[in-house]
Length: 75
Image (cartoon, one colour):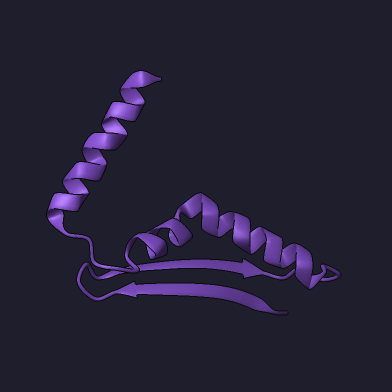
């Protein structure tokens, strides 16, 4: 049995994100990897990692938030 894990620790928030996929008997590693990637995308782990890759100033966060609200209002 093989276990695929990713863990992202955030010291400031004390949050642990962990996506675990257990490889079943007679299952290829490719299909287990696809399940793991799908699970990570559904839980939002990859997007969160990308968002925290660089520091973003509060003024930039406010601008992005306002732009997203404006885009949502157009739809």
